[in-house]
Amino acid sequence: MVEPREAPAVPEAHESLDHQRSAMHHHHSHAADSRHGCGHHLLTVEDLSVAFRMYDETAAEAARTEKAGEAEEAPGRRPSAWRRYLGAPQREVEVIHQLNLSVHEGEIVAVVGASGSGKTLLADAVLGLFEPNALVRGRIWFDGEPMDAAALAAERGRGIALMPQSVASLDPLMRVGRQVEGAPRGRRAARRADARRRAERRRELFARYGLDEGVARLFPHELSGGMARRVLLCCALMGNPKLIVADEPTPGLDLDLAVRALADLRAFADGGGGVMLITHDIELALTVADRVAVFRDGTVVEETAVASFADPALLAHPFSRQLWHALPEHDFAVTDTAVERGVPC
Image (cartoon, rainbow, N blue to C red; front, side, top):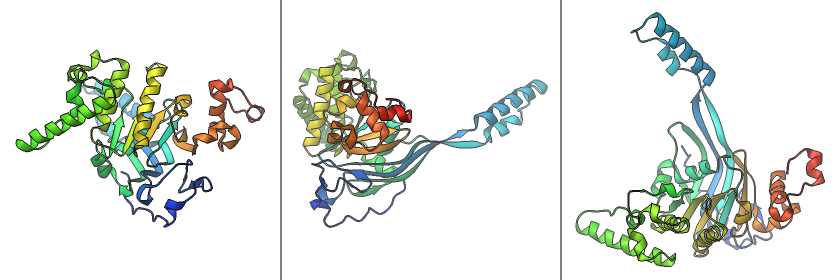
């Protein structure tokens, strides 16, 4: 459970901070154009840790072996080893550790790192999506308000929207227009009015992102890759969110479509929203993001402005410098310092 706490006091001079001179404060970095609407960050994550309670594999295997032996000795009688199996020692496996992150209004923060490093778990935590055996610790503020798991779940699909990584998130048996609009709320006249409002909002979004009205009558398998991505973006925007969590929005797209998808997120941010862009494609992320949070081994090891990636000397963490050297335009070069330290580039 995310711990609810009082929102941190915001200094009176926060709005007037010169971020060029005060690049770091409140546990995170700023880009030159970072701004604080109403004197606070749009999203603040502090000391977030996510662990999972699991059975100890060794103890569980011993109980299974004992259970099988008892079943052979006394067939038909429920073996007492079942109780020992269910009561086997448990352990916590921590996947995200003491993570700090922020998103300001009007900016895209790219969370970059290797696949399988836990970035999607970060997205789940921000959206209030927790597995039953998850242990979540830390503090999250959204739009200046301290949040717990219930508050985050209430904001999901409203103030905070998800743009998932897979078009498989679309229901293959439902027409696209109905999926984007969602189910109307209320009863009788109120329900009909809400349905009209949703249809109008969907038409507005389709027009904005170049989707013909006929697309609304298609099923997901009839969409091209680029169309499906834009439909997912329309789904995310239906509730007029302030923050979009985009979880790997470009896999499977050719370069032109990937650039267009990120341009849509850039337009949303330029309109005053915030985007947390989770990706392993740092090269593409650098073309659209304002700041980069470098994710490794379950935590953010460095959060910095995109401008810092112009020169590895501006990057504070060795892993960030490894990412810089791994970019194609740098020819996957290996520095002498990295070799001396035994750090792979």
